[in-house]
Amino acid sequence: MEIGTIVTIALLVLAGLFLAAAVFSSVYSVQNRTVKIIERFGKYNRTAQAGLNFKIPFVDTVRKVLSLQVEQHIIAIDTITKDKVSVRVACAVNYNVLEGREADSYYKLATPKTQIETFVFDVVRSQVPKLTLDEVFDSKDHIAMAVRQELATDMVGFGYEIGKVLVTEIDPDAKVKAAMNDINAAQREREAANARGEAEKTLRVKAAEAQSEADRLKGEGIAKQRLAIITGAKQSVEELKSAYPGVSEETLINMLMMTQYFETLSQLGGKPGDKVIFVPGTPDGVASFRQQIMEGLNASGGTKAADHK
Image (cartoon, rainbow, N blue to C red):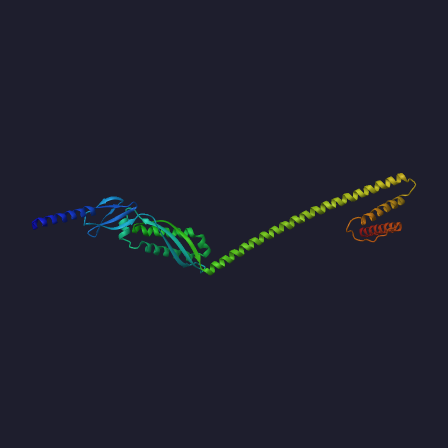
């Protein structure tokens, strides 16, 4: 084979390989929720969307693949509250590249996370020092809203959209946390003591009410008992009068008292555990007992009359 023919074949093969490489490099695909930045001779040309795409071989270049998915960045900021408490505030920032602004997000901002951190630091350190520690805990949503408003305004110029911003953690100094735990424990103990006191008070009130009701019922019982005794004594006297018409009332009353006296003596020692009581057991004892009662009644009546005068 002549040299010219060999050279021709070699050139054809090289041309075929070059053409195949050109065709292969001109076809490319883009994944869903991503875009590709295409440059032509080092200058931005267009943004390729998801699907099958074509470019000029050896002229157009895929410079960057950008994700359109939402990303989250956790940022921890050390600051101090109005009441001089060191605290660490953690914020979770959700952000994504704006569709149609992909070129701005790539060419205008090299490190979006660093830029977001700068804005978050600025907002948090301007908000927290205005609040006490308790107010910081109560104002989590307010702080998150302030951070989002600042980020949304500033980052849109760089082609980024800010989604939700959450204050995920507020972590005071360890000594402050220990003091807060002690305060909470003391407060809960105080509430428990108050609850126990109220319960004891209720029990005492209920016991007093029960005792009062018992005393009332006991008094009513004693009053009814005395009324029954008086009624019975009256009936006994009437029966004795009928049985002994010629006997004086004084004698009949003495007989009745003697009967009651001996009944009382029989009852004093009739129960287990009764204590020893010394009382006269003769009829003279009954008369003496009656005389002492009458003298006591007369003395009581005389005292009341003197007081009345």
